[in-house]
Image 1: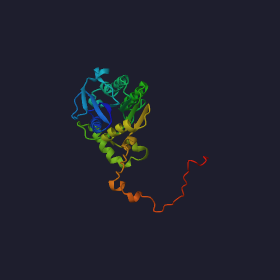
Image 2: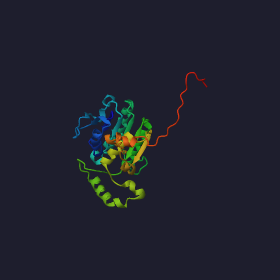
Image 3: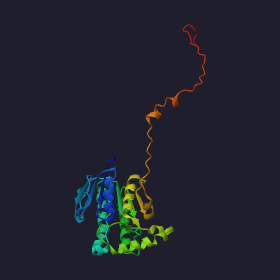
Length: 261
């Protein structure tokens, strides 16, 4: 059993909720702390919940952990305005990353978007691209940027746009090959699983960007179980006995009165 501790922000969303459950079920982790504005439904003996106002989040609210997983994200419609959208998707993740750096947390993992780019013609992708760039400039010890395509799974809330997009992508899935393969929808539970695998097993580099096709393929390494040697095999003396043919060699013993050579 491992001795790792993790912090998750954005634990009530589709990916964040799955991530918290998988972390709690993973033997490498003994402690999982969720920092949220409302209490998650999921409970577990390993799990500690901290209800906080992200506008007033302070350094002492974030204790040391091996990883801080940031799954914060919303939509402009849900946020109510571009200003509030940027607060949730840009300002909060950047502020939390800065606090994590001060607390000495060695690994910050953040979910952005498949099309994240500061120069993108799409506002959503521009915000995500700016977040990525500012996180890189922050100089974190290790930064893993997670860029999934459309996330699918069972949400507690209904998002009409995402549901429509999910149906379209499911119909078009067989046609998305080659360069278009990156646009295939991905299960949120697989993204959560991939994030844990990245934290535990992927090569440690200052900055790594993980795109959706790679996230979809990540899986835990195969554990090779050594075959137990049975008692019968261990004590099978016939198998280990010496050959029946023994060659005798003449042995001469030297007496004390013989000259030493």
